[in-house]
View 1 (cartoon, one colour):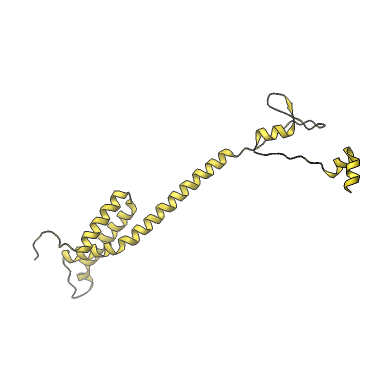
View 2 (cartoon, helix red, strand yellow):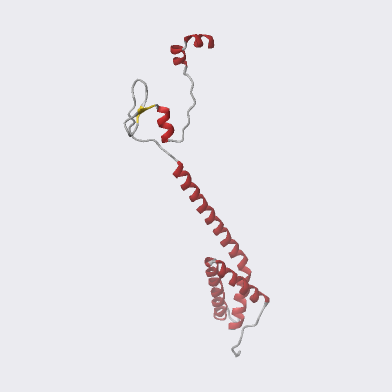
Length: 165
């Protein structure tokens, strides 16, 4: 029987202790839990091995050393996954912020607009009749440029319409 005492120190154990401490400090709780589960599963497998495979022998120290080695091997992979997950989460949060900012800038016109059938002025909330361009400009992000459609050009400026044709 092996006397209880400190586990043998290996470079893998020292390295995994350092990495595990860094993981816990950095807030990567999911990675720490994943590695803890891997460690415990390996210890259990190694302790059950003699009961499953005839002739196999494993001590508690061997099981712990083997579990530390496996955990140290898997740590960079788990940390890489956690780093990618955090990066994706941060990108998603930035996108949500950008979308909320964009949505706050969107102005929409809705409902019924009282409009003059002849001059096309719109009655605003205060009861004043204003040009449609002014109303839409103050209630949206739209800008206007003016021109003449062919029918209005012919009706109001027939000399220019004849010269343009």
